[in-house]
Length: 211
Image (cartoon, rainbow, N blue to C red; front, top):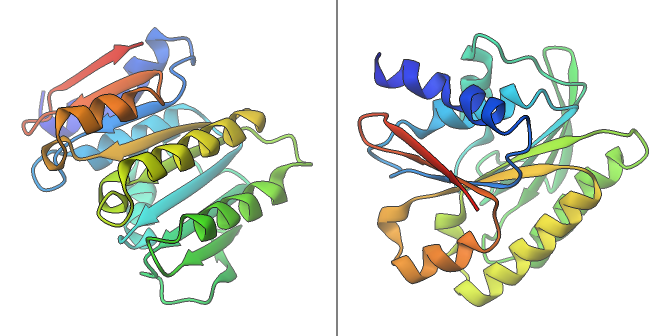
C-alpha cells in the first residue's frame, strides 16, 4: 500500500474504530516531509459534516479547496466557512463566494497575532449556523505558525475557549501541528485540549491514540 493510499483510509479507520466519537483531534506531521493533507481531508470527509469550517494560518484556503475537490468521496455540505489568517486570499475582512453552487462565507484576519480578531471571525461564521441545526467540523491548519506570533499560554487559553464554543454547536475540530517545530513540553500542553492524536510519518505510516 502506498503512502497516499494509506493516508486516504486513515480517517475512515479512525472514525470507524470510535463509532464517530473521536472527538477533537491533534493531527501531527512534519509540514515539509509528511503527507498530512490527505489525512486531513479524509478526517473531514468521513465525518460527513453538515457544515465545514476551514481555518488556515499563513496558507491560502485555495490549497484546502483543491485538495477537497480531488478527494474521491468528499461532498460539500450546504454550509461552508473559511477563515484566512494572514490574509492569503487578499480579500476584505468579510466576503462571500460560491463554490460548486454552494455559498461560502470567507472571513479574513490579516494579523496572525490578532487572536481577538480570529475569535470574532469564528463567532461570525458559527453564528450564521446557530439556527440551522448544523453539526460543523473544523480543520484548523495550523497551530504551529500561530505559536510564532503568540506565547503558548495565551494561545492555549484561546484554543480552550474555541473548543468549548465549538462543542456548544455540537462541532468537532482537528488541529494541525508540526511536531518537529516544538519541544515536548509544548506538545504535552496542547494535548490537554484534545481527545485523539493522529500522527503521520514521513513515509505515510499513521499512528493514532486516544486519551
